[in-house]
Image (cartoon, helix red, strand yellow):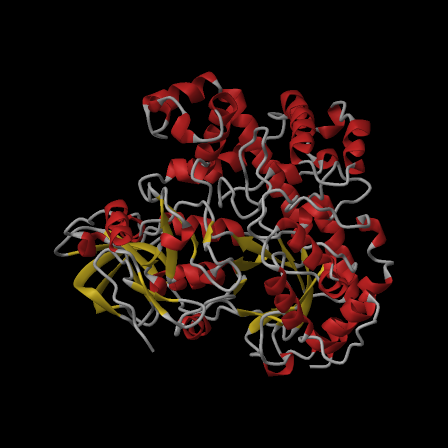
Length: 610
């Protein structure tokens, strides 16, 4: 194993590329990243939180611990085996008070054995009752279909909030927040008070007629109707202000940011200087002057919370945690002192992208995250898994290291920056334990040695894809979620018919030779299928292969089950309508669709027979 040299800032001097060759980071890149990261205070180790497990030795001797419930206990050099899990305050005899996070060390494991489920791009799953986009009532209908088919879970795209303005962000992986959700997914008719106003149903239904999902049109319509409902009845239900009060400062910050965006635009960096600090007197005055607008955005979150609870009741719904947030968004505004200014997160050059990737999200500065008691990370994990029973961590390798791209440079000119992975994994385990939520880590692509072992030790399931694995499914690990493909990779029908290849060729994502080689490599994953077979036959065969995997969770996409030929997203493209392709049939037709039922039976028989 080649261990890279990591400096005091956490920057790796070298990295291993996709060809297993060691590459050196340019000195100018290292210097720039050190400048962005900055020097931690000399007393960081005395102030940073301690993350431990019951029975662990501590870094301090005698100390008083104020527990979450307000009671106190005394410790002397180690935590007793019966010490309560949670977020406590440690008050040592000598030195400053600091946070003590006590974790079980392993994520919660569901009592069920092997299960299967559907991967759902909710925006794409439109019903005849939708208003241009799949919504939370549609998610409830998918849940009911899945339960009747014997599915044990659903997995959905990230549902996090974006700026409430025109120019709606299409990518679910670049949200404005990882703590609150997108009201675009509300079913208008089911919002409290909706029966008191004109819901403009004809205009809403007409939005379903478009071949693509037009988020701007959908949001303009829904926002108008939802504001009408709020103005008429929003303060009538006593449950709303009580819920708002219990959400505390995080929801106040989100609702305030949304109201500020309505006036000053979606990037807080461009606001008047006095509004860039969320704790400034100017922001306080704005809130007082726009009280009803702030309340509207908080009310939207209450409505989303209610509908999401109804949509997920009784079924594990694995929600997706993006690797980061938009630099101009609400979380970046609230936590600007913890996020890096002058760098974004991405990926180094690899076999799929010779130029590397820049995902546009500002990274958390490791030492600043520690000094903040890990609170930004805690809140993001907790909010995303809340009430649904499952969490998928996108690019889980980011808990160990992230590829930082200095502002103004290309993605190829970045470097890896290290994170306190053991602490972060223990926090994930604590939140998983409390929410009784299964956790899946998306460990695809280049994974350095030791990462998968660390994930397994913490009870985080891995991710195995038919398109990626060299070994046949029967030989995959049991401690994983398994699937044929993902939203970023070809559908089975798209691969088989060559439609995906033609689209890539038209968009110039590679040379003809590269694209042909890539397609042939994936076709080789489908042994025993005649080249003149119908796409539906190939979809069945792919899921028969998947069913042989011993993995604890087997996942099929609705796109594959409908023999769809276009993947939801083609990375590296901007002219393609990524994240805006509806399913080819309305939701009501899914239960009677032959191929949907065939895929369900194939995976259902596999888990029942295990």
